[in-house]
Length: 159
Image 1 (tube, rainbow, N blue to C red):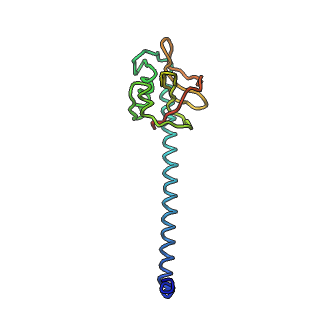
Image 2: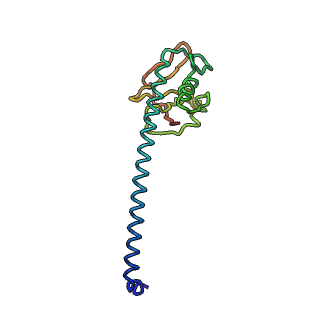
Image 3: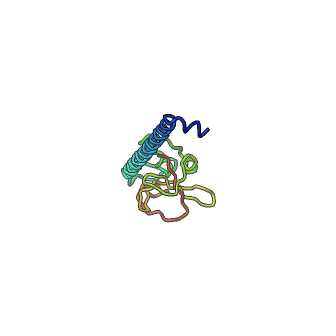
């Protein structure tokens, strides 16, 4: 077969040309995928920054169990309210929010921070970067920016 194929230089030339075209298409597709991934990452970062900016606007609002804004919140009501403003619907329960978030090991600004104990997830907050978070902590407190105080957390992404 190779003797027959070699006897036809135009076929060899055409095959090489087709191979090069395929390689060029594959390279173009990989470049396109990388551009799309970069654009998606930039958009997610922008949305995350918007989430944190919106969270900061609620600073000082009181904690009220079961409240979901606009002037008082419990922890999951706070995250639910803030995310709704960027078009993301979340349930009103920290454990239910953990169920819809994609767990990540590289937290980005705007990701959710889930606090865990022996009973599972018991608190949720918004990651602000540099080990800080926005949250509505508990009765008698207000929405505030605080450092993450424990290592018993995991991060979830919904953006």
